[in-house]
Image (cartoon, rainbow, N blue to C red; front, top):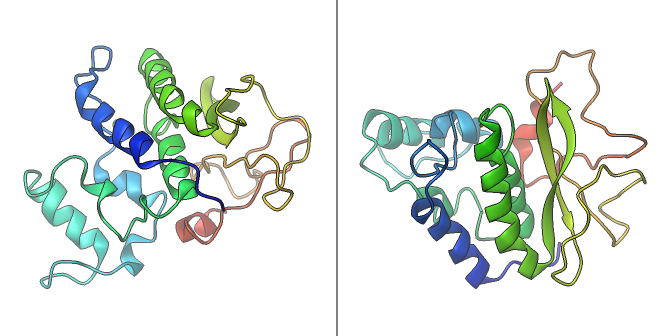
Length: 208
């Protein structure tokens, strides 16, 4: 995937999470109502990723030790500099991460979701990306990302045409609903064909 998100935009995003105060929620934290481990477990195979601490074997143990047991060990924005998560490696991982921040499993306070969405899109639009609502869960919006084109935001609407990652046009990445039952299909809207999660997020492959 081509790289469009600049270092300037990445810095705006990182700084925005600590500089902008949410609605009645204090400063935004990227994991929302979840702890760091629970949020990242939805995206990454934490038990298969190595530890940076010689006392532990896995990334999950690292996170529990340094963010749950001792939350002051690592800064809140540690995820943006951890090479195991790859958020600095390319656009797709960063966009998937940002989309996950808006999921109903992470944030249930709709005004906060809307405020965060405006902030994210305000930063991403300069590089030609946009987060849009594509579905709902129990009335709460579910978002995906796509190329808005040349830094101009597209309309916020459900996709109605088949979209594939190899067709050179728009790429959608819905946040998987790990709470759905095995009989339920993956998130879809209208006649859209969603892209399956790529190798960058192997944890997604465990969803039924």
